[in-house]
Image (tube, rainbow, N blue to C red):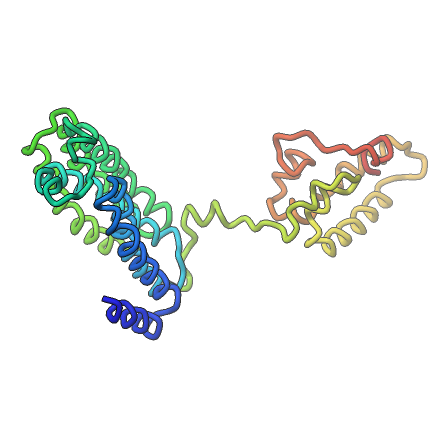
Length: 311
């Protein structure tokens, strides 16, 4: 076993990348050092085993992309959630064998005399499989039809698990078990059929659109207790801000006659003020909504601002 583990690490490291090889080593350690001894100690071993079973598809994604990404986690989540109704049904059907073998599964009579707890675990995880297709589409992993097809595919699993929960018996557990055998290959085939090709010009997914906002290099600077504290959030656009300041002053001088009072000058200033560099990245609508970093907050004021707004 040790030789196979070492050999597998070398092959993965040389033929794919270090990330995939390290995931493989970590999974071997989790299986051999945690999951295996726990099977005779506590029923939580099933959840540990589900993590072990979810890592291989994540390794496949890492081998192709050299990164752990949301799309790869969707494949791992599918394996994780699938294993629970699959194995809980099996543990219920073979609970006497597990007891004789000394394995402490949740189906052990000392933990679950009626089978209701086992069935509840199967039902919760089967329900979690329903939105997997939608999340896969949102992450850019698959095309929109996959969202509907994956949900329809998971629905019989959820319904059979619900029946198993209502009446825990061997017949209902067997339906969940055999249904799980059909679900997994069907889900994987549909994922392949509806995959989004990974091209260099691939458009951003919905999730990428939500996460594409870039955090400033010094995100704490805008909280500084000073008159220009919140504008420090835009330090990266300082040169552009100086250009806008010069342009703003030029427009004020051009439109403000010497006879105009200070109120008129303030009005022109407010009309020509531009959002700071960091907020400018969010678009003019943010500036038009509020002068604050967030549109639902009032414009900030500070004690050292000279008793009034910036002039």
